[in-house]
Length: 278
Length: 329
Image (cartoon, rainbow over all chains, first blue to last red; front, side):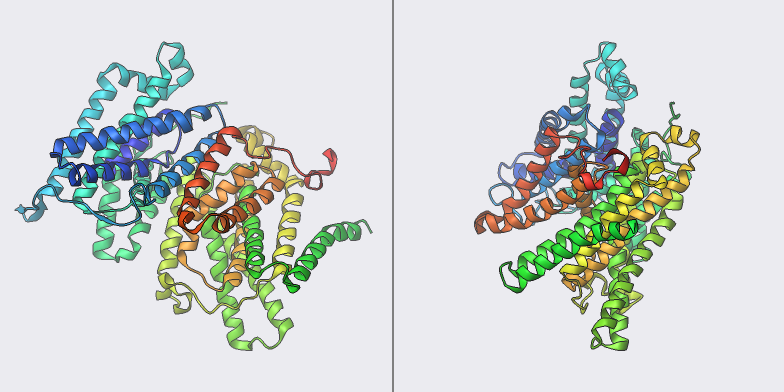
């Protein structure tokens, strides 16, 4: 699940070199949309996913157009601060009583939990669904990025967006598309999160967002398989720490690993070292 | 003689300002609440000046500033607690001297830790350094949360209580004045020029014979020492420390102040610190109670709009005359 959020970070960073702090909050909004889709409108599961993905994507594209695009030529830090601003805004705006409200909400389970033992390991059907959904989106993403026209555009823009523009790539459209795609993945992540940990609130995006970003950096930011690998390492290490040490140390361990990896390979496990240009 | 006149020039505004504030609060023209907010603003200004040294002047993207602030706060608070436990509070002069010592110790502790953290991590560049320091901030938060298992006095996740309220108006004003003076003199010294050179172009700086790595560690350590001192003042202002006051979101606050004021602009940082703190608290008073939760909706909006209109910060690079170097004044 970290993987789905991490993918959004890594794609956006790969293309515009911006740490999109608002991404974790887009994930939160996706989760809430799914909550309303189930609770208020009783939609079937595929429609819930579509709703969360579509809503998150629209939100991300709007954010990109309003807040990030005007700052594309400004110093990078200005866009970063704006991203933090957008993140805070989304958190507190949705916490207003008139919007989602500041309470914790119980996320309705769309189906019964069944656990099954496979080869000595207990697996619930929720974990199965998360795994399948992650693999499916990853496959779809690889297809989009490597086999379609817009994917080629994305790769071109990530190398050099000025040159890509000169080569006839519609840079603005590609960047918006990337934001939308990343957000749609976060939307899927939001629904899965709601199903796995059936309690949602408007600040739930902060820690997963941060850890997903860490996962993306760990795996080598800008690299899609790297994000998934990083997310797997993060998830494993956190579970292990909770199980064998103490859950109070859980939030720290991921970052200890991150720092250790960065010192060993400064661009992440699967990242390509960038030659310094003079 | 020149030294004495410079010293007077630096001390006089601090003496006047703290005198005026003490007079006003003694006459109850200023209510204690706003005096406390003023003190908080000064403390935040000291810490932000430190981050401006790190990020604004040296160009090192640090997202772990609040952790060093916390280290300073806990160190100073613990030392003062031991001191008061051993000698009591009767001797006013001794207590104040010990407070000065513990503030210095807080600064030194933060600086030592910064040096320790900086030596490996400062080899990373830009965003990677940012995420590594952010990670360090989260790790420190976890350590603060679990600190009571080593030293029960630190309180861990329940927070540290029983700290003497020693921070007063003169302390914060002189602290801020001192921080400003040190920062200004550092920037316009040989060291400071080297730091700015690294920010502008690290490769060019190293070809000019600057040991870039050494200077980066130096800039980082100096900036974190500011945070440590500020943390010590903070601990003795509110007399209560909680790990959540030092988590990574607080690092973002300081970063926002520095960027809003303008990177590499001391005066801007000062103004932005005060504007930020007074805006936060002012809205608490100005908004009707039923709209109080709109505070954090309006602030990010204001932040976003400011960045869109002035991406280089409110003041850009325009510096107050007394903070410029002698050559360009």
